[in-house]
Length: 390
Image 1 (cartoon, helix red, strand yellow):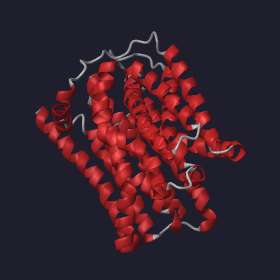
Image 2: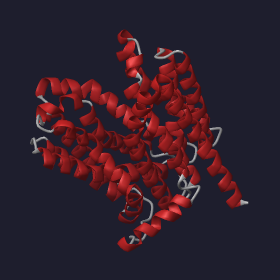
Image 3: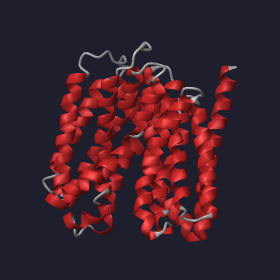
Image 4: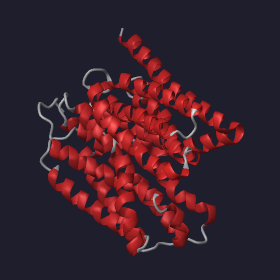
């Protein structure tokens, strides 16, 4: 699509709302995970699969989703993903047997993947060049905002009406979003569709994307970021004073969102998105050193989360900055989704292993290496882009 002079903010916000809906596909299980044994008392350790099943789909099919979404159509993919998510949540509200529930989570992963690939591509197309950094930073907050809303409103709903009510409410919200966007986007020009890829060609299509220092760069940094974010929220709390723990854990995601939307958006108006991401990684490394010296310090925890917010917003803003074509943006977004699911899957076990082998110092050293690694990989890819362009 041609670059717009004016951002279509009502549509950008509508698509962001759809992002909240698909983020809740993770969050609706996370916020009630400690009570899932009430639904499935015989599941045992297998109940952990109810969270990871959605991510497994993203790890395997992240890039494939980018290729298929660009051929099916971004608008159609987003609306269909929302309808599919609504249908799956409605089925889950019927208290499916555990095996069928796990299968439904796999299908839900398809819905999630379609939306997170189509959503940011549409937002980039609907935003002006000046506002694109702000619009992509807004999109990047969808996970943090969704988890906060689930904690504020989802848990009281569960307390009053039971666990299954959360799935039913999610189904209604997803259906409402699908209806809203199906109507709102129907007359909006959208990026042209790419040719539908032949199944036999899919393995060969991955390599050019992974080799492109433009398409793979946002995902390369995102892998390091996602290895850290969820795991930090998981393994740091025991080191925070018990009387401050709830406040700090609630403040950390909000600090990340505020940093992304205020400082991050300001920086994106003046410097390239990749530079913002690198600055975020370096500041995050500083936050780790602060925590290493003062374990569990509340200000250090919040400062670390704020620094990570720069990585969050800058990574999504880098997709349209580095990739000018809509198909390339969709493929870059697909790889980012793939990297994010991989990072979320391996991050916490990696931190727990470091903690078990070398204690708190091992945990801090691992975080520091990951943050510095994220900065370094962006520098190496930037050098490769310069070399190719020279």
